[in-house]
Length: 404
Image (cartoon, rainbow, N blue to C red; front, side, top):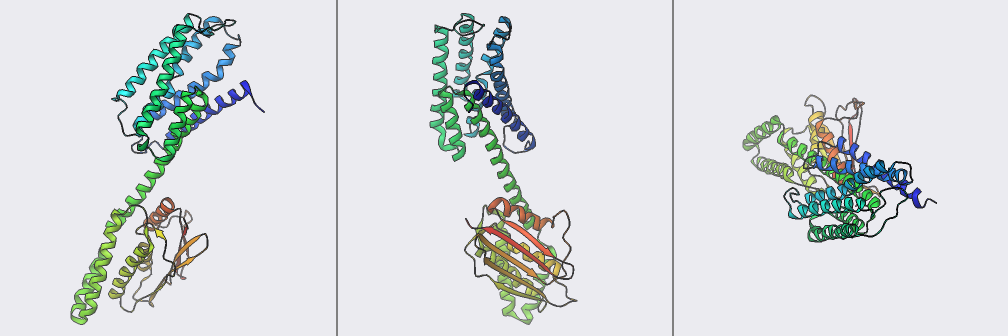
């Protein structure tokens, strides 16, 4: 079991590695919007330097350095020690939606930190701390002032936190609180670990949120790129139906109106929607296509399971993709089936057609529409999309969504 200096060395080495890993993450996700990259890099660099000094401290303290080298090391350590917590406090204010560069409480923290550093310098010069080998520390006015101001700075952090804690999400709130309490208890090494975990978890959260937003934006673009010939064919069919079958023309206009309404509603939807809404959208779309291609499109629905949620614009584009690539007036009618089933761990939505099929590419990409749906399923409800197809043997698309 590791105790004493061995545990401290392992802890400091861990914080150093965490800091390096955090810098790598920041580099990989450097294009995240609304992310204070410079502040994050400065904070992680300060944690790395802090950890490096903590690892070297025993080497200097055990008499392996001259008095001048130890004094320089101690002075540098005094400057480095408060930097990670001061920078993370600035990050805390940023997460609360405040401009830390203009914040009064941030300025108070900077002043307190500067006075603490000055007091610790003077404590070393007067021999109140072990700044040289074989010397004994003693409690003096400068050390008392540094300790008092450190407690004041920690209390200020806690005060600022409790004034603003409602502005933070749950995990972030817990990590900030743990870190400020550790600062108050002067357990800096553990506090550094929490600080690095906080930065990395927030980076991952923001990255996933941006990916989801990008997927939603792509879906909106896809809706705005509705096939012009589909709209033209629909209006042309309605024109001829007005003379041939007025009631059917009225129904087609109603279906087309519902289809358009659901399409444009899907543009502004955030999160998931009830599957029944997607089903209604798909029915309206297929009814319009059947009116335009009478006798060439046969549709079957078998959807006993409907009490679940799904990203908007998921089912209808899958069905539209089947119609677009499978409908051929010169061949037999296209049969499209939409079914749902409870699989136990979740639910499956299965869309099949008897169209010409295709050979899926080796890189797994299925085209803009299906790739977009797959990405949104993954980010919004931990779902998956798979395609089985073969030349001349139709296509089967399966959407799997776990129960929540």
